[in-house]
Length: 485
Image 1 (tube, helix red, strand yellow):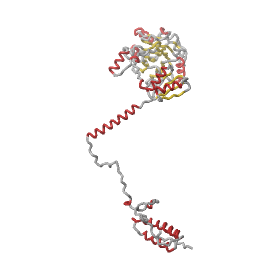
Image 2 (spheres, rainbow, N blue to C red; image 1 turned 90 degrees about the vertical axis):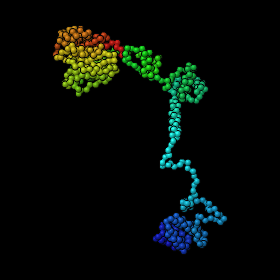
Image 3 (cartoon, rainbow, N blue to C red; image 1 turned 180 degrees about the vertical axis):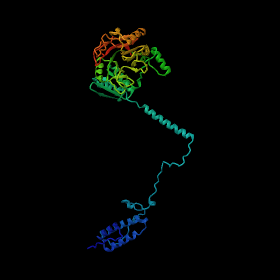
Image 4 (cartoon, rainbow, N blue to C red; image 1 turned 180 degrees about the horizontal axis):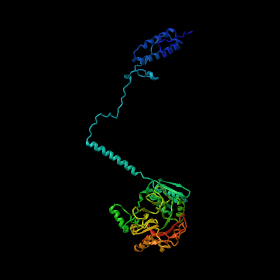
């Protein structure tokens, strides 16, 4: 029975493992001898630690080999540098793991390699002008070559669409192969046959083939063939197209094709103009919208809006210009509503007269105003001159509180007399409906005080008073005919 030994206190776990493993197959004396040898090896310096570990491994291998063969020969430490009989070149067997690698750095053979990249100097060497010019020329050439490659890359042209299916598609395909090679692709849709090409040259060839065979097709303008079109409006003295073309070439260096330079066709349109004294519009916006949509009103003058600057008034598809009372009282005020599709600009002139008004200027030069004169106010000739002298053609629609039998009133008042005299002297036309426009709530006699005044405007139809909307005034509508945009 083999006696189990306890490992020494100074031995490591590796040493204890060796003791227990060796005691199973060798005599006790030989184990003690090996342990003593290991202790002596532990006293070596730290620089020989790798040789010490290798000796322990070799001792373990030798002990196991001796236990199997029952050989009582004296222990010999394995040496990796030993050579067999007759061999003077060293051991050439396979290396098993990192334990058999050379122990010291000087044992590694020096590799003979050649580095093609030399280390950079700390102080750069000065470069002569010739070297700098050569490097700059190389960089410029490389940039030009990259730009040339980018420019040569061509985007595919637009597709060519053949209407319907091609019955003899095989013949068409062979014809395309003979002319453009394989640089095309064909796709079929529900109703058409579409041909895609890779460049403009093949695109033109395919169009020529289809035209020769009288094949119905369509395509789009190539990017290189597209031109820019400009619209010139408001040219003074109606110059001829040739004069405009010459001016563009001489002054702005723009080349205009003669066949694309032409005068625009004059557009004739009619304007529906209305006026209404709302006597407060805030609670009547919905009915006003319905009225304007029904009669397709383009421009609407609203009197006595009774809005303060804090009140909001918005109507879809209409631009609204307001003139509220400056003291923010709930009285008076005018507004002009114009459809957003009618080109115009707001008139910002401050006329400083007794009549409340706001207006716009149309593209044909006509000024349109919404006006209101309160009953207690008397306007003067200067007030009317300030309005009608703003343009050659002027339209003023609103409630002037001017009464005269000439426009269906039972009597005249001072404002009516003054307005009639001014109309005679200044060639102003007073347009009024045959029906009364104002029906007082106190059952007084109806009058016509909602009128339209015009200057140099002869295309205005006879106004009409309509018994609609919720107010003691009826809305009045008229049409401005045959206007050129």
